[in-house]
Length: 638
Image (cartoon, rainbow, N blue to C red; front, top):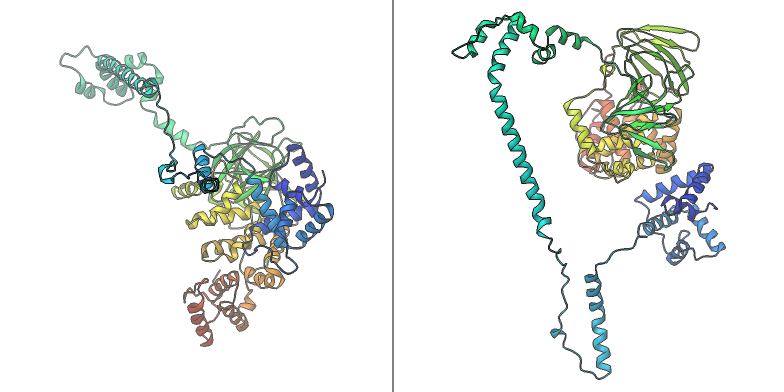
């Protein structure tokens, strides 16, 4: 099947047979031009600035031509001419894609009630019937004698009495049966009560406590002969004693035991199994080319990507241990190494290798480098990417990997040149050259003892989870959650968009009016993306240039990365930032970033400034600048 714009739109809107879907999918996967066109279609259909094509000008298009194109009624020359116009004009491409998507949703036949259909026919044909009868000379009937029958929905048919009262009668009978059974069990318990009252104090005495006073307190007036405590202890079964009152020594031993992850059975061809989910885990489905929700017990084949969007987390179980994927983290499952050890790639975030019963080899890849480890049993190891945005500091092209070693063992780390042994608790860093650097004085993070949890975190996860439905795409729910009234849910959704890698949905939030929480969350997410390595930074710059242009991209770049110390002390920098607050500045993103930079450089939280209504706040900041009261803040002491 030939790959054209029409077939591509049908493939995106899922209106093709399964055979053609696979064929078009292979052609798109092998064509960079087609992949770029798919991303462009997604972007232009979501841009609110685009309108319908104008009547005049280079983008002018006849609506009948668009309809004929979508109905496949044009000849080859007209199709080629119209598709060329769509490829060169975002307005025409957005119109064709949007209309095709709407038509695909209206493909199902609408069920109209017969009463509504009859009422509509009567309304439409009433005057025509009167006019025809008047022309023919027949007396027209008075419409008041034949009123229009109102549209009344008929009530449901009355069911049989057995269907109405049968379930209630069955429930009453079941309640009566359970009540009788409980009454009989209470009668039997009352008959055995004296024996229980005599036995319990004897067991207490057998453990070393005073048995005689307790027996006297519950004995009847005519007590039976006292039985020695040793005999009672011998006659009584041991499990009942343990169930009544556990020994203090046993409780202490259980509390001191370190929990370890037991090995699980991983299906053939899978790298891991979803063992536990704290809220939601997402997996990238290569066939449908979208992120889907994972379920506990699902197998994860090698090569699949797993994301724990904030504030959720989860656990992956392998044949040789379990791994906690902490919030706002992404991992890729790899095929097991030749030595049988599990292998994972930490794309970003944090990963915790839980203590295992056997230990053994472990392989973790990060930024194209693989580190081989040999860990003993019952040793927790944490992995953390240090790709974090820092104000005024240019991000490095290759982030480092920090390895946290828990207490109680030694971890062997195989570097490029040699193998180093790290005794826990300790933290080391694997730099871009593959060398291991020890971090002196670094404290082990709290999450090394297990995935963090609290009442506030649980409540936040529940609030965020309410925004997702089983029958809707995950991406659609995340985009909808970016407009939620709850600021925490909104920040979660914006961070999740960055984690899913679809920056075309993230950058427009920078200019969203009357939503400062979403704009600030988008700024934080894009800053983290710029610091996440060369590939992520290049992808972010390209998206910024597409949405804001080359000139605005340079301005946004300085405002996003921050000003170094030398530029912060310059009067020109403060002058430029205050000027960006002016009402004449059309970009909300520039104004939001300008006030953020001013607060960071000067340490001021006042005067108040509203990005959506900048008139009053701009005048106050301008007065501070003119009075020479706006100075860079002193650097914080390390």
